[in-house]
Amino acid sequence: MKKIISLTVNGVEHELAVEPRRSLLELLREDLGLTGTHKGCGIGDCGTCTVLVDGVATFSCLTLAIQVEGCSIETVESLAENGRLNELQQAFVDQGAIQCGFCTPGMLMTSTELLRRNPHPQEPEIRRAISGNLCRCTGYQKIVEAIKTVAGENDE
Amino acid sequence: MILPQFDVLVPETVNEACAMLAEHAEHGVRVLAGGTDLLVNLRRPIITQHVPRCDGCRTHPEGAVSSTIDCTMWESEPLMASGGSLRTLLRDQEKTSPEFLVSLHKLKELKNIRRSDDGGLRIGALTTLAEIQRSPEIRQDYTALAEGTDNLGSPLVRNRGTLGGNIVNARPAADAAVPTIGLGAMLTLHGKSGTRSVPAEGFPTAPGKTIIEPDELLTEIVYPLSPTYSGSAYYKLANRKALEISTVGVAVWVILEKPGGPVADVRVALGAVGPTPILAKSVPAVLIGKVPDKAAIAEAAEAAAGDCRPIDDHRGSAWYRVQMVEVLTGRLLKIAVERAGTTT
Ligand SMILES: Cc1cc2nc3c(=O)[nH]c(=O)nc-3n(C[C@H](O)[C@H](O)[C@H](O)COP(=O)(O)OP(=O)(O)OC[C@H]3O[C@@H](n4cnc5c(N)ncnc54)[C@H](O)[C@@H]3O)c2cc1C
Ligand code: FES
Ligand code: FES
Image (cartoon, rainbow over all chains, first blue to last red; front, side, top):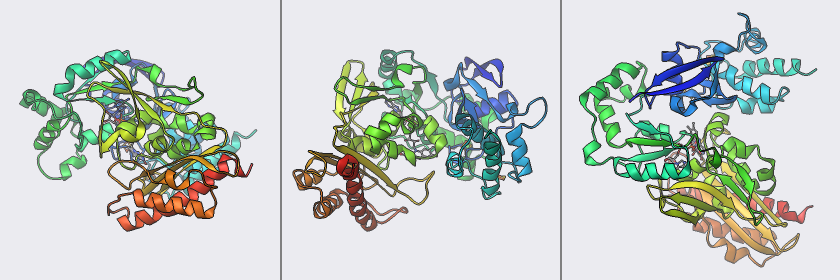
């Protein structure tokens, strides 16, 4: 009972046969081998599976692949530019916002959405924006600092 | 996530969706909107309405179950840790889960916010909670609804979850459903044999249960005109600001005859203090016609506390909840009266 769907992932168009109950997360990790997107809880609580669907930060674990037919998906693999970390990724490294790294893909995608919507968010808005992304290591402060660095540098 | 086997149908129109729902009703069929409730509940499995499947389709052939195990088993899967073999678990899951999901993602006509002819507001059922939260119009005229979405789940939940889903899911604490009742909204239900309009407060009947028929879709939520001297507010009492279910939720809506009073109409809706979100029915009799001063508000707050029927659970005792309904209703009435025009 597989269904054929087409979607764009990181700029590349794909046509895939998927089981109706296949989640977007499974499609990305297992069918396309994009293992940068992580699986934590599988029920919307942790946010590590976050990707952008037509620009909107979306937990891929609670999204069926069929629901994003025709959509454009961006995963953490799309952030680096010409093999180099982008500004936000580099800020995470520089500020010590990555410890075990498990939450990092989701944190990066959620903050990418935030910075596109508002290039200069203040700290309360940053904290609110990442409130659906859990981190067990950093205590959040360094993640907030990293996002602030980029928010500040956008401030021209 | 291991989900039970189901097929997904993708209608292009509302009528097609209703026809699909009617056709498959006996096999267990659910509407899929954002999936933030449904896909979690399917896994548990705790869906209570319009399932299980008919006897003929209760179990899948052995082959279907083992292919599930081969292709989607993840070693860390928490389901495994809860004891029992995966095979038994999947079997049990399937007995209580629908055979079909009707996914609404192509019905763009249900994703909009617009003015109705009489100056009220019509919100399509597929409008996301994030879209509601960011709408300046809703924040201005239907403040309680905007505030209802502010601390609902997390930004990720709001990006995906819909207003319709929050209402049809019928949880007692539903943070957008409570202000919807408070603001006196009507729900448009569209089924195979026509359309009906029902008041939001009469819609849920028990946790997870509503008066919706198996072939019906909730298409639109219609809020009445917000008069000049009116104001509303919602407060979610919870232990955290994100990813938390309310201990108590209170929504109030006040309409004044003129700035400073007297009260022309008032509605108070309560969440997490009964089997469904409820309308505090004794408040209007206490407050209408009076100037909303401290004493009148205190009396109304006490009346609201008398209307709720909470239980003890890990979020709070019934006693505590009753106290909080009184405190919060009082505070919110004061805020709503201010918003209605006394201070401007
Ligand atoms: C991590 C997490 C945190 C959450 N926190 C909160 C919270 O704080 N407060 C809160 O209130 N909720 C919370 N929720 C629940 C949920 O996000 C909301 O209830 C949301 O609004 C559901 O909308 P949905 O579109 O995802 O619904 P779905 O899951 O798609 O559907 C929910 C139910 O409604 C039915 N349905 C949906 N749309 C229609 C329609 N148009 N017509 C007929 N039937 C329909 C479905 O069949 C299903 O039974 C949380 C969920 C998660 C995963
Ligand atoms: S894995 Fe998707 S939210 Fe946790
Ligand atoms: S760095 Fe380990 S969970 Fe965030």
